[in-house]
Length: 323
Ligand code: FAD
Image (cartoon, rainbow, N blue to C red; front, side, top):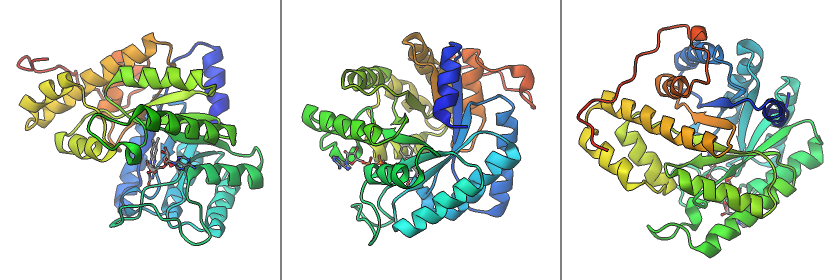
């Protein structure tokens, strides 16, 4: 079933829902461990789960293989990320045909980042240079078979952010218009890049609506569960870090348990605010870990904890953390 239909059905029932994102592990053992973890997490009834492609050097073939097992072995509605990086059209079509043959109906259509060691995205011969062209291609050649999701950037895409103050107004609106063109070309859901300033997401959400983007806009939530990883990701994505987050994290950065506990608390607060503003679906970047994602959902009271197959830790923020 398409994710858009699942989201619409849930919203018609006024139900708050969530989804989990995973990435392909590097080894076969890692892949099997991931399936064990997914199996436990799927018991919590995410609306769908998705698997990334290309990031960290993984291939579309591995992503397709994992998506196939997610859909047909773990039995969760699955979304496969598909990027244009190093993918001429005939290769893309092979993957799309493979998805169809395995009953995978959901794609996150992306341009992708430049290949490792390159600064700029350069399209391969016979390939696409942006997600818009991939969306158009899928709709033209595969009709309505696939539900298509695209990426949105609440702070604008990092390539158009040229100062530490963020994108200029002009670049931000150009980015929004481009996002609208992806939706107009046939995308039916937007999932956003990670953010830690919830007000920025809400502004982006309202700006999209004002521009006439009517499809679901799903916030991408990345729980902080490791200080170095958080710094690396937010540096790469040029994400704005609110001062209160920096102030809370810096004193505890060497204490990973405290960082995880803080990440759960922050993620919970962010999600509560989003829910209070009428956002009904939360997309969690799990980084293949369950504690933080499950901790947040548990705090929000939107999972049936009797379905958790191993006891959840009682998350407490250490008393010495100042916020
Ligand atoms: P596009 O939509 O093509 O565009 C990116 C930006 O380029 C636009 O925002 C705009 O500023 C500019 N642009 C491009 N074309 C035009 C145009 N015609 N007119 C005007 N402006 C234009 N990367 C991976 O490698 N693998 C993954 O699995 C993956 N998953 C992701 C999931 C999510 C939810 C998100 C938000 C990102 C993900 N990424 C992934 C990262 C993504 O590949 C990068 O951010 C990449 O640099 C851009 O991909 P895109 O699909 O947003 O590109």
